[in-house]
Image (cartoon, rainbow, N blue to C red; front, side, top):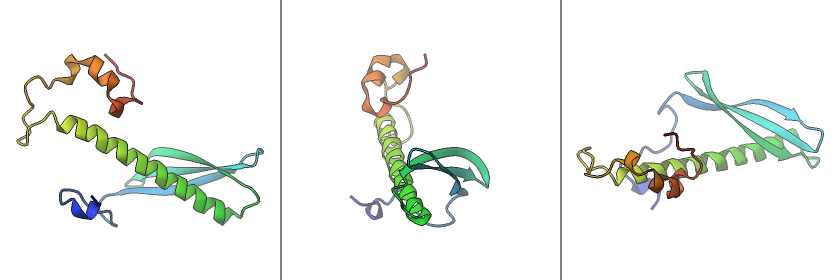
Length: 126
């Protein structure tokens, strides 16, 4: 199912929010790679940085910048996938009215959270 078929989601377009991704800097490493740092900002205030390493291989800066943006887009798509997976995991424990289902208290079941692939990269703090 494509995003266009999902009526409860916003389609990406300019002006939906105040978040932006900006190329912050490029550092040329001595081992044949360039490190591209991207800043994620909200209302022009930095909220996060993501770094992508691109092999130089005698490429122009423009070509490496294209590769860095491609890698960044792949990272962001994976983050969206994982966020949607985590959302779906929580959504199935909530009734359409927003009322939680009986026995849906995930805090009482830490062993289930540990096995859930949606939480594979998260440390459980109890």
